[in-house]
Image (cartoon, rainbow, N blue to C red; front, side, top):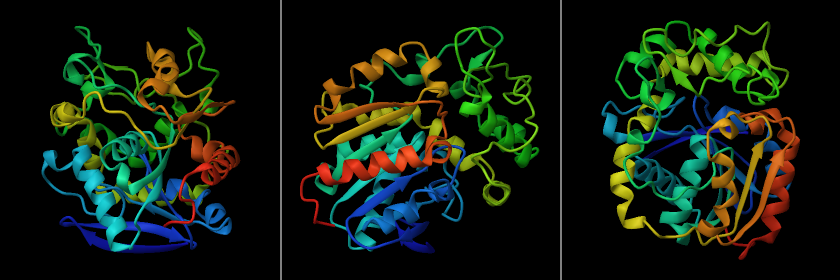
Length: 329
């Protein structure tokens, strides 16, 4: 597994790569980096695939543009197409978790000519909302949904960057399957809920005794060092473009993901506690008619590729041979 970089679309993208053969592009979420796929890359490479995991713009060793509006889904998909061009990859299977899943769905929607298949974890494909997303998220006099808390520049940065290691420990634990069964009213913590701006999102998240069983000290320290270097602004800017994405995606309304698709989510993923999420997942086949499997991974939380690496690897490897043009890269 090698760390490399390439200049595309005015930014430098850093990426991890291993193997030869049909390409698989692995996209991370927030707050993660390409390192979050380290349990998949060598397994996919050993199975005869070319596994590539970039640090998306704003993360890790990739460029972090200053402008907030430089983080739309169109910019990120453009980066991935540029990366493919630079690596002489005609078509790829795109895999993503969290924000990476959203990017994967959108790339399959926008550029089906470059995508052989999509495997999304944690975030389902959703129809374009009837109004800007920030108009739909809940708010009260005292609290905001976390995506709204992330909207104001510098507010979330000040909190999250105060102690990067504490921030990551609490978020990783609270959104993982180890936090608890996540049944209604059971008190399982979640970082992705309502936030009182004056208090911030971390205050109500417990300080874990140690790291989760699925996360080694070396991997955690690598991730903490990356965010200590870059801060969280790049990742937060993805949320600050939710409404802009909605505006730009008007021309895509009514379109379907026509490539083969796979979806999986952990049974303890925090996303399942969002009202209507199960209905959205159940209706995905209308938006992705070639969705072949919709899987719940027992006990898994939001960081599923790390928490349940064997299950994720098995799903990807069983998905690959089902695709058309399997010999093309």
